[in-house]
Image 1 (cartoon, one colour):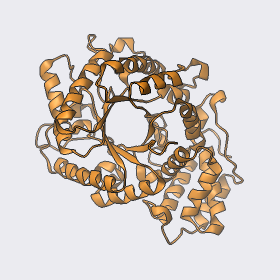
Image 2 (cartoon, helix red, strand yellow):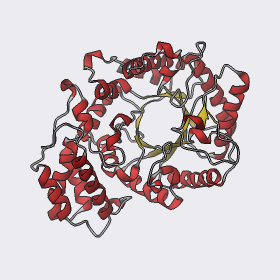
Image 3 (cartoon, helix red, strand yellow):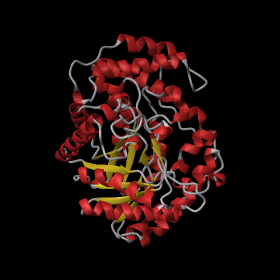
Length: 441
């Protein structure tokens, strides 16, 4: 990868879950600082955050003001670590929570609304709500203007060009406060900008439309300000495969190197923004909150992206405390594509336990990798290889209970080694109760 290649992680603070201290939204500054130390040590050079849908209003509560002040400090500390900070801008979203009341979890649809931006009054309120945060977060290095989810409109008159018009308004508003930040269109859920009766309720149609409309947005970049680039979710390269067992030949063959080069020739950048790779998709909610291991799956996606000569990749984490392995793997693979899955697992194991126990812990991690739920849901032609694992189910349970964590903390782990082992053990216990892959060998 090039020296200025962005390998970033979106620390998703849009979901509230228990225990709350694990949610990025509730992190105190000291934990943010420790976590950035960990990411920087891995070679991650960018982080990203957003303002929850329920909070897209002028702040009026202690929770809101506290969070803004923490994030201001986080931005400064990230810069001290040599990291860039990106900020996600939701499209047509407004909080519905009355002033003075604490905003609620954005998953509750009563927390926010998505007014049609064709309405001038609504459009003004949408821009004004976001503008407050543009002014507060003056040190942001890049803004991503999201298409949908949150956002989108099914009024029958709006389409992807409505999103582009709203993006222009956001761009102009951003430039009032930040003259130098990079700005990107993000076509995540751009398929939400159409009448809902045109959206087949099945996921595949949504993903197909996202790819189709992303192409149109990419073509329309020529009409955007010269310093606006694009981030593409690449849903069609991974999520439909696991959700509906789709065959490779059914997925849109887009984008190609030629399209990326065309955008580069305009002086613009192109990023990948794949979601639910490092952490579970909601369809696998049974594994939510436990450690994931899907190195071979992540590698398969990165190998598809590498020939495109992109400017960077932004991964995602909802529960970062539970996903140290995937953060470690994402950083390792984007720095050196030749490193094997086995080497990554062994290096990670060596950070947690003494040298004579590293091989044992490797087998535990390999077992979890080989029993990831994504693997079971992929069509046969897309199943990735299993990593080498010499132990079975009863063996790994005995191993995890019999090894001792390192007393020191190499690699500036955001969790101490003993806490990481607890995360791994709880994952095995959850797998024992409810295996999701159909077989435990």
